Length: 112
Image (tube, rainbow, N blue to C red):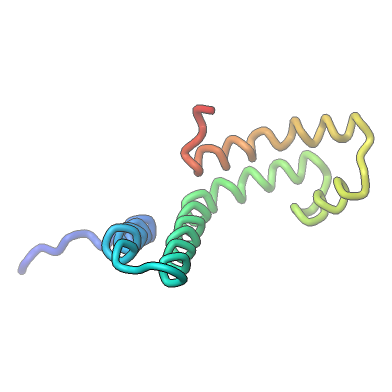
């Protein structure tokens, strides 16, 4: 039986699609089509980052929200928008550190 290459994972598939859009198709179009193609490639890169960070982000978020005593991001945002006492503001900033580290690593900017 012939051997088959491993099935590509979602990250490899998305990388191939974005590369094809940017290197093969983008040079061939202009105007609105070029803009839309760039937007599609950028959207796929966002999906790729989110899929890559999904599990770790959920774990970190759960710990952060538990530490802050809120059920989810929506509740935290509502609390921030309503105004915060200085000590609560400091606690939120400190608790969000691990979440920021995950986001920077996913974006490839962890060294900053």
